[in-house]
Length: 552
Image 1 (cartoon, one colour):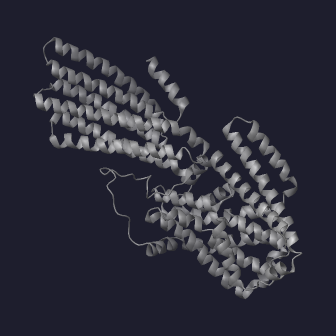
Image 2: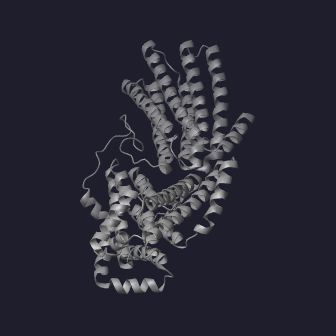
């Protein structure tokens, strides 16, 4: 074997890896947000979760990416371990689609895909279409890499030492370990199986040995999720363990079966395969499907087993009071496809704190309770901390490979964080008025208290609907928010007039009137911030809504 063959093999492998990465990344960027939505919607039971896992992994061509995303969802509390188990089972079948594609050997038309992808990437301005160009380009580069590896492997047959070493590898356990180690290094079972496929096509590997390498690849494919879960919470580690246990148990089952029935299995698969490459692809799919059929009824037991391996619960943290992030931070598994979802959940938590603090401040204004006053200031510090931490995180993820739809929404999320922080500031302004009342013994009339209470109720409703619309996409609140915003603006004008009337009639002091006027103005501005939050994600909806608000 000379240096030329080694360089050709290395170049072909490099092209193959780059093509697969480009294709997978392009799919995640172009359709990652939609696929994430599917992943979250259709996983209510294990069977549907399995089907979604097959579809999802088949599209993005990476069981590792799918599993890491699932680990991220579980870590953030957005998905249960039972739901995760179904998706992980499906991902193990979906990953075999890559080897099926490779087995058809589309190398002859690969240059057409490369040219088409390059033209789209170079001359198209639309980001989504450019990512589709990346997918097409990646597909072409992948098969050109395969062609290069195949040609170099044909040269390996001229080296008696290599041929003897590979064809003489007849120890099943050694073949299994080879699959584990190679896949752990490459971080992709699809790549390893594709290499096995090429070697089998060139007659460099015995077909029965290919089966042992394939089941070893299944275990090696778990490395990505296991590494990702190390920084996560205990449930994230359990989700990764489900993937590992599924493959370890499935591998043990098949290893035992192959010890007694390797030849009949090889003969059976060979009958439905046109060549050795198709044999490897079909064997990969059949092994995975049978594993899922065998282990699917025991998925709940697998989940329980992970609790035995990773016992106990994470230390309970009071996320409401402490300066701690719940969905993003050190104990969260980072995945670009779920990063924005986690930010939205963190912003929702921040919004809840701000809303509660507003009502606490209004209560302190009337009762002058010192505990409420102190707590408003303490919670405001927490809100400021969350604003800084979330903003810094968004700056960080904005530089990563986010899906295109998520990239478009990042700018709006910066504004949402600012709007929520401003709601917290208004609550602090209100409690400062309470302190002024307390120090100067300023009284507020019952009539004024009733008016403020009515306005607060409307602001609370508008704010609550807005946060729900932002965080959960509840578009049915859209019209209510618009109507409430109109009523809040109208009430603000009416209350300012009634305030002037009371001043004119000497029914309240100038100091009380100033406090009343400031709070009414502040509540009206909170209503404006609520509208901004509600329509932050959809720019078109926000613009049309603001036009409606301004018209009235």
